[in-house]
Structure formats: C-alpha cells, structure tokens
Picture (tube, rainbow, N blue to C red):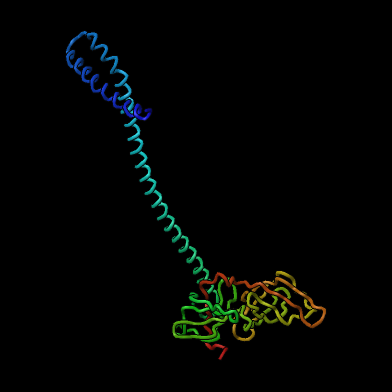
Length: 277
C-alpha cells in the first residue's frame, strides 16, 4: 500500500500543474496591456514569482557552471600545452648541457694535444672488455690514422694505458689498471723510482725499499724510462703505505689519476717508432 501511494504522488503533482498552469497563463494573457492588475492577475503573479525567481537562479547557476566548465577546459588545454613545451625545453636543455660537456672535454683534450711534444690524435671509446682477466678499451681510430701497437694513451687527467692491437679503423688499448700493465714511475716528492703495476682496480707501486719515506697523497708520475710514456705524466696518488716486518720493499697502493669509469675520449701519442713488437 505504501508503495502505491508513493507512486501516485508524482502523478497528482503533474495533474495539478496541468490544470493550474494553463489558468495562470490565461489570466496573464488576458491582462496584458492593462495598467492595473486585477485580483486574478495579482494572484497569478504571486504564485509565479517564486517559480520565476527559482528558475532565474537556476539559469544563472547553470550559466556560471557552464562558463566555469569552459574556463577549466581552456585551462586544462593550456596546461597540456605548457607541459609539452616544458618537456620539449627540457630535452633542448639536456642536449645543450651534453654538448657543452662534450665541448669542454674535447677542449681539454685539444689543450692536452697541444701540450704534448709528440704528434697525437684523439679517439672515442666505443667498447670495453667485460672480462675479469683483462682491462681493455676499444677506440674508433686505427692504423689508417697513424696508430700503431705500443703507443701510449693518456687523457687530461693522466695515464690511461697503451695500444696493444690495431686494425685499419680501430685499436685496442690495455688499461694501465690491468695486471699485465707495468709503467716506470717516480714519486714526485723524493724522486724515488719504482714500477706501477695494475691490480684490476688501481695500482701498486713496487720496488720501493723500506728505507725510503713515502708519504700519503704523494703524486706519482712517469719517469720517461722504457721509451713508452713521456716523462712527467700523472699516474696517481699514494693512497696507502704498509711497511712489512719482513721483506725489502714496502706495500704501496696508488689511486689512479684518471677516472677509468668515466672515460669517453682518449689521446694517443703517435710515436714514430713504437717500442712494442
């Protein structure tokens, strides 16, 4: 029963509106043009006034909502456009930063080439040997550029290694940190001579007797002996010194001057007569 009453209530309202509204409109139409409002006219105005007010407010609210919606749509489009422009500008800025960084590195290599007495050439690293036994690098210059086996390889920070194999357009370089690498060296402070040997990650300075005082942080440079590396190139700094109770020599660890994890471009010194067969 409750359900039926609930269903008939909207029907009653519709019927009332169907009957009342035509009467109201008729009264309004019959009094158009009169100076004085009749009683029915006044009643109709009083009845329609609140409806018109609510309807007007509804229209105003709908208009405001629509204009706000359009404004939000426009703002959303502008935000999307700004985001696209920001993303594009970020790419451009990244390209500019990379170009500036590369230009800075190449400028350092150019300065290095000009400071080296012997002819030299710059090459880019295109590969690294992943083997745990050998530390080698492959560069994009070979014998057609004048590179030969045994030539020393450096960068603005210091010694990198030497060429061990060459093809017409590519060369393989043995990194100075490789255990098979050995370089004649000098402790810059006290001029003590020794051999820099690679240990895979860094260097060991060998054949420094217990009597020699070697300080932490002392710079190690190439001695020029052996005919491979010119004298005075940076190799690294002493990072640890251990004086054993037994034995003639100290155990000295050296931190490389060159950052082997960030190498991109190298300078190869073009000896006229390579020293390695």
